[in-house]
Image 1 (cartoon, one colour):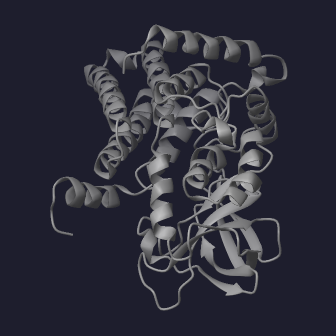
Image 2: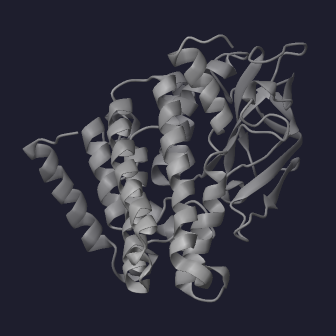
Length: 381
């Protein structure tokens, strides 16, 4: 991806703003949050997120009429890259800003736009995603959560799992079966459900890292207004797929800047400890660097169009790369990585442990391989 002079000027504006604002009360937030670290300083990161919003740095790709910046794809890529380079804190509003917001803009009613988009843009309401269930994770069409009409409400009963940041969220966009007797993708609806009500229970899922950013969410006759269905009842599968396509957008390039920082720091650790003197470790570090260049090139190519198979290839590439980096980190750190106590060892332990999940969440490797086989290679299901 090559950038014009105007785009490089935009990059400098982003860089200058971040440098000027990641100071004072926000200075200590650099590097906090993100996968496996969402427990870090959530209140302060929320304040930072609202500071971003007040300055117009949220909802970059949204159209101006919906309060966005109407940024081009290139500008979005630049922002995410500079945000990651500055080690700015992980945003808490990502589900609403990056997933639900664009979905509502595409499929929502004018009334839904008016009600839900401004609080997302201002970061006054936080969202989580109610898709996966204990018996329907990557096989999302097998979900069992149901919703029935009761006058002017939908009544929801079911059990969702791996719900990121549900314990901090005000609302959840929920995929539920609303047409009895239907199976698979038929008869599903996309509902917007308030979390603060009787009938909604959030229970943390403790991970190998000892943290709990994922949750189970139980809906026991929870309610939401009949108007809070996105699109037509029964059309939820199409809309849910659109949300999943949005999930693998420009933000991926920012994620890779974070990966690059991890690799750079690991290479420096290898030099300090003498591990880099081992030709096998040196070769693995070199291969990791090459792999990261491949991922970036493929990510840029994927952004050029909406191709399910390409998005699946990219998911397999980056998740396996990051998992392998966690394993390499333990090798480089050596026996010191087996003991807790120092920030250095805890960092590499967390990378190793949490990256075990990379090939599972967001669509497991097995499901991605099915998509690649059927949609790219034309193989039978």
